Length: 480
Ligand SMILES: [Zn+2]
Image (cartoon, rainbow, N blue to C red; front, top):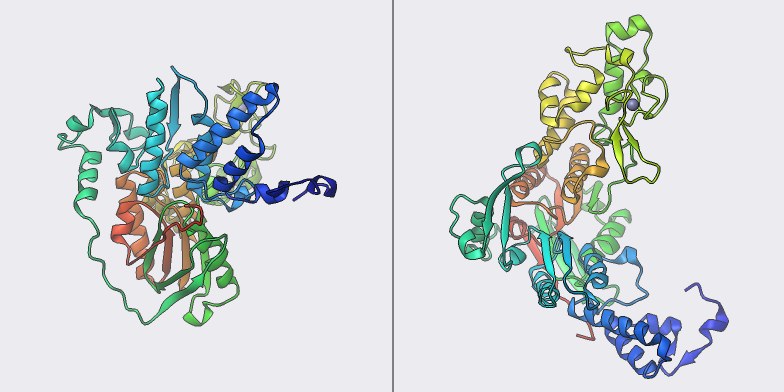
């Protein structure tokens, strides 16, 4: 707490500022209402707004959090709903709310709670449009629009629009069939793995969560699920990872760890698909090794966009120009979006220039580089996660959250080793549609076959039904 001592010396019957903001939101609401029974007229509005937000936090089921809790210790689901608090409070009507996957990463119970909050916004006279994959939300919507058929170039078609009743009659709808399948199979009988070797957790507890004990089978795929605040992320980040670092699991033969969490992809404005999967630099070297390059004395640097040499200097190799306010982008008039100077584009590999190759989709590039294992393997892993339609030169900041998560997964999978490893995933299926989830699961099973141990935090029913071991955590907070 970075407050001067004299401020902390001011106390109320509930303690000082630090004590109060350290309480959970349930207790905090109570204290605030006790402390501010009368406020000066000019603060009335502020007080009302504060109470309103506190009520929204209660409705969204996250009142076990405390105001002082660090943002970094929150799970994805908690963050999503905290952000929503600001959007749902107030008396606005006649508004159009467009929400991008608000239920992503939510357990069914939490998704239903979220839906009731959305309902109350609707009842005030607002319109909500959600982009959403969560089965609990889809099956409660007033109007469903199904887009398809594939991703990227193959998408953009409206396959269906109408009410749930009509939607359920669409025998050819992939989403409808998926919903029906999820509802039919409750808890499918899981294979009981060999219990002799387990990664064991005994009575772990932190941040006030209920003590957790678990036995994750080695060489298998486990899922940790449960509502927000039940301690899933805490178990992963505050226990499994630190214990691995302390070599607790070394006697089990687990030598390496791969951690894959959601969140923004670490990349800058220039980070492209090609650079993310690390084929940029071999690609530049390949071009520099071509006879024509050697004749002209072009080094790999000539094909770089991050340094001057071969790139278009008008757009600094970005292919686009950004207006001074940063909001508008237009194609560079000099290189016409090609990013390079003409002389560089004269160098051809299998009749394609460097810019032509950056324009290829991952799948197209896979065929081009079939005989180059160095490129092929990286491209194939990406295509296997369902991202074959992305273009090599596409910047990573244009990707949706789901695409970004899979890109990260693909990068993690490329590091696959023969040594038995522990793979930890934080909501790998977040924002993914069923077809893509199936692709992911296949990758997961392949990893298990190679002897790796996988543990994922996930709420997707497809994942839970396919896991070898499921740990379902419950919330148990003193205030609820
Ligand atoms: Zn340019």
